[in-house]
Image (tube, rainbow, N blue to C red):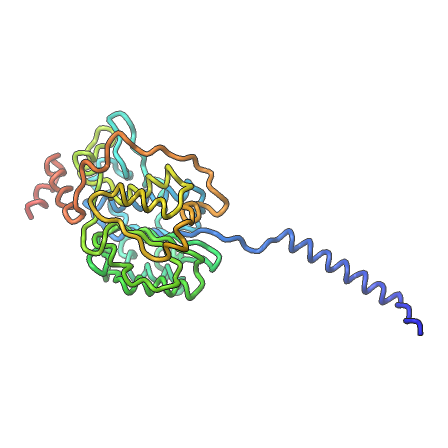
Amino acid sequence: ARAPCPSSLDREMARLTAVRVTILALVAAAVPLAAADHYAVLICGSHTYENYRHHADICHAYNLLIKHGMKADNIITFLYDDVADSPQNPYPGQLFNEPTADGTPGVDVYKDCVKDYTGAEVTAENVMNVLTGKAAAMKGVGTGRVLQSTATDNVLINFVDHGAVGLVAMPTGNYWYADQLQQTLATMKTQSMYKELAFYLESCESGSMFANLPDGVKVFATTAADASESSWGTYCPPQDMVDGKNLGTCLGDLYSVNWMQDAAANFTQTLEEQYTVVKAETTRSHVMQFGDQAGMGDDHLKQFLGGAGGDKALPEPRPTPLPRNSVLVDSRDASLASLRAQAAAGVPGAAERLTA
């Protein structure tokens, strides 16, 4: 028996179906799936002018990320923000993370440094809420922004401050303890908030913060020191000179300055290659690494420190006029060194605070 001929209605329906399939295919091709992106949370956990170096470190990191293509909307910054406008600052409204010779203006890292949480908003609880995406908890606090990364995105965390075994300090409220930090990372992974995560941690005894890092969290962390030693400030008096003026404080931290200057000069290197360089250059403490060294060591810096669309910045030569290792100060003595330098320069009130 012969098959029945399709009716005119059947033929029209088939034609419309074919057209619809074609249109959907064209739309799908024109609108790709959401691309992986890069996010960062930058945390300065200190305050007062004697901790100038921490504020300069974090604002330097912010500028580094922006210069290499990360979107400002993808960066969240915690900064107490009482240093740039401190009456002790000879350059009001500016911060410098490295010195310059007399007659050479310094590179101001503060001008374009956007702050989300300042003053009493800089707490361990708020940091954990931001990292785990708790928008309701942050409503009405600072900008209220929380990390909105997904399982396809890479995340950078940079923390700079004082620390001790099993904790890092915050300017307000409780310390941030190692078990809380590690639980925060585990929660982020469980909530599919990143594909891979890089962590730079600057503090004394910072190696103690990752000693029991859970398996499978896809984290590559490096620290300024091991679990039983101080980290060190750099560009300290009398090398704290910017365009002919002494600032009376350390301008940076040795580990932080090393990894950022290295990243600016060698942005195409891997995480493992950078770790090797920074470990060799940080001569007063033992830079450590933790986490997924085998799985992430071959990842490139640009996968965490730049924009997802690729790096457009040119490499920067490493500063050479003033060696970072010549005037270093134990971080625990940095505040005292700063006060001594200010008192010697006749800064009002410094001598009184030094003898208090």
